[in-house]
Amino acid sequence: MSILIRIGLLSVPRNFRLLEELEKGEKGIGDGSCSYGLEDSDDVLMSQWNGTIIGPGHTVHENRIYSLKIVCGASYPDHPPTIQFVSRVNLPFVNQVDGRVDPSKLPVLTHWNRNNSIETILVEIRRCATIVYTITHSLPRLCQQAHVSWCLYADGWYQDA
Image (tube, rainbow, N blue to C red; front, top):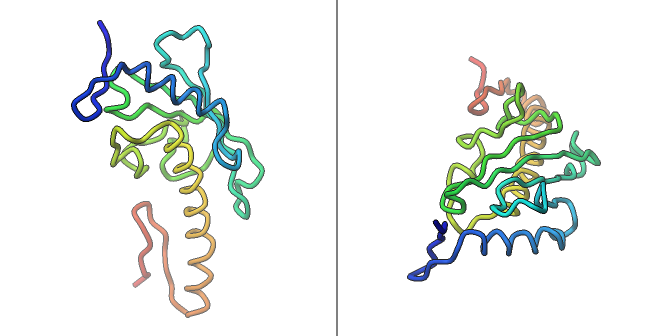
């Protein structure tokens, strides 16, 4: 049974899409801050992937190397892969016990579309790490300077009563 991807009116085998991603991942992404590739070169289904993210500069993640496991199921790219951090990281969308990324808390997974890719996910995780750091470190200082008392809750910032 062949697993197919629909592009317009054409159907392309899933593995062709993953082969494209593999080629791109082996060449590196942009500035080299994210990379990915197959966990096992003998994985004919191309399901098990490894990813690496170098922490964004000027954050607590700067110069840290984070390893991830990525599993592209049979319905990929119609459905997002599962992502799990192997390295310990403190981000609001990562389960602190098992390192799994909660798809409902990471926008690229929540609003998944078939044009997204492994690269899209890694770049978005890195971008979100920068945003989380900026929000948790810049906004409280600005609020203190304005003599406003704010609290950071899981779902956002709220002014204290």
